[in-house]
Image 1: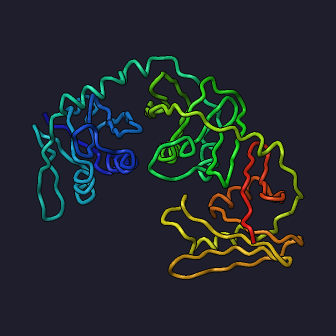
Image 2: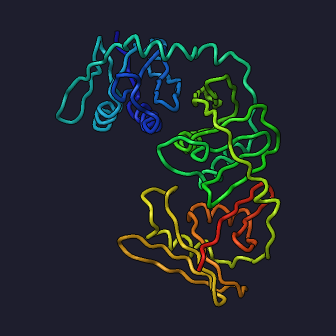
Amino acid sequence: MKVKINRVELLEVLEKLKPLVGRAGNFENSFYFYNNNIFTYNEEACIFYPFVFLDSEKKFPNCFLPANKLIDVLSIINDTVDIKEENIIFKSKGALGKLKILSIPDEIISIIESFNFEKLIKNKWLKLPKEFIDGISLCLFSVIKNDIISCLDCINVNNDEIISSDNSRVSRFKISSKIKDSFLIPYNSAKEIIKYSIIEYQADDTWIYFKTKENIIFCLRRITEKYPEVDTFFNNFKGKNIILPEGLKESINTASILAEGDFSLDKEIDIIIEDGKIKCIGENNVGLIEAVLSIESKVKISFTINPSFFSSILDLSNYMVIGKESVLFKSKNFEHLIALINN
């Protein structure tokens, strides 16, 4: 059997799925092709990604391929790839080669079939509020980011609220309608699912399932820890409103150039308000940038914040509320508290 693959389209899908590829049982990081779905799996999550090949009337063989090797090969070859017998046949300028496709071990087939993909598709799915992904995206910045899964390494979805905290920051996003189930979404999974247009979900005792309109299904392992109460932080907060100056976004972007952190979600800048000025400071081991604007305020405070997140807040609101020990950013459906740094 000979099947043609759109190399560019397949590579885009694999690059998207790569962050969620992990070891499955005793087997190395791989992409699994099963019943015309691409399946990825790690200890925290898995994805079923329906993929239509150029020869749509033919069924792609069930097999697995090492993730990094497949991506490397697809990155250097021409626009179409042939699958013939037990090999992927590829060509590039001055080169011809093949990549052996491997039979999926019974252990992995057992994992894949335990999700019962066909049944999942047919099950009753519950609609998610249209702003669900917006809420997850905003609350990502207040999650503890480490490899040990605990409740504070997760986003808490509870009724009509999405909540996150890392003990120095607390975020709360109000959604337009209640979600039937309460659940935690680990940080590493949350930062991947926001890349997709998730519209529905269902849940059982072990997994939370999310689905896109293209029938891409995310299966996230259920975390059973109880999330701490955060309402008191917002309900007891009192402070004074300060209007943030025009041009602050530009100052934030300037400071972010040398912000500490390897990735966008990890970056932080220092914000200092004193002597009628607001300073945005980005500093790492290479250097320092300080962007300064005038502000109508006599307070003296400082805090740290992610620059991308701060820019997103300014799209929602142009003021902040300064309290005794923290500052509050507030919009119609989003609140974010940050502990002040003692001077």
